[in-house]
Image (cartoon, rainbow, N blue to C red; front, side, top):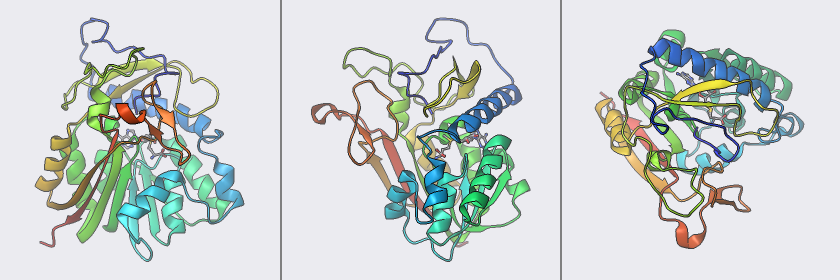
Length: 297
Ligand SMILES: C[S@@+](CC[C@H](N)C(=O)[O-])C[C@H]1O[C@@H](n2cnc3c(N)ncnc32)[C@H](O)[C@@H]1O
C-alpha cells in the first residue's frame, strides 16, 4: 500500500536518480515479511483497526466488508478463502456474515494476531501462514469464494502467477472478488504540493520491485523500526487479462472515485469513512473492484 505518504518517510531509488540495484526476489520478500510483522504488532493496537469493537460487539464488521458485501453478494453457507488477510479483521467479518472462512498471509505475526482475534471475539476462523504463491501447497482445499484486496496486489511481483493461484483455489463455478487500489493512483506522484496529477512511478508491472524506506505505516501508533519495502504496480489490463487467462469469466469491473486511505494531500475523509478528492478534482480512479466466476470446465 503506497501511503499515506503524508506520514511516510519514503525514498524511491529511481526518483532520486540512483541506479536501480537488482535485489534477489527472496530478499525482497523477506524485507516485506519483516515490514509486515512489525506493522502487524502496531496495527493490532491501533484505533485504525479497532480490534476491541470486534470483541465487544459480535455483529461488528470491518468498513471494507461493509462495502464489499454489496458487490460480492451473500456468503452465508459458503467456504471462503481470504488471501493476504493481515490481522484478520475482514476475514472475521466474512465469518460473521455466515461463511466458513480461511485467511492466509505471508506474515506470521499477522496470523498470530488474527488467530487471537478469532479466539477473543468468539468468531470461528482458520488462519495459516502462506506466501501467496505457495497457497495451493499449504491449503489443500478448494473454495466457493476467494477474495482479497485493499492494499494486497502491490506486494506481489507477478500478477499472472497470482491469477493462477486464485484459479487453483476456486471450485469450478466458484466466485472471485477483489477490491484494491487502482494502478493509475499507484503511478501518480502523491507527494506534490500543487494540484497536478503527474505520473512518476511505473503503471505497468516490472520485474524489479520499487523500493521504499521509512518508519511509518498507514495506521496510527508508534513509528516502526527503519524498514525497507518492495512494491509492484500492475496495470488494470494486466490484472484483468491474467484472470481471463486463468479461466475466470469477468462479471464486472468497477472503477471507484473513493479510497480507503489518505493517498493524496488533497483528499478529504467523508462521513462514510472513505477518502475522496474535492468534487471538481475527482478526475482519477482511486480503487477498482472486480467479480469473476471460475469456468465450469
Ligand atoms: C494491507 S494488508 C492487507 C489488507 C487488508 N485488507 C487489511 O487491511 O487487513 C497486506 C497484507 O499482504 C501480506 N503480504 C504481503 N506480501 C505477501 C505475499 N507475498 N504473500 C502473502 N501475503 C503477503 C502482508 O503480510 C499484509 O498482511
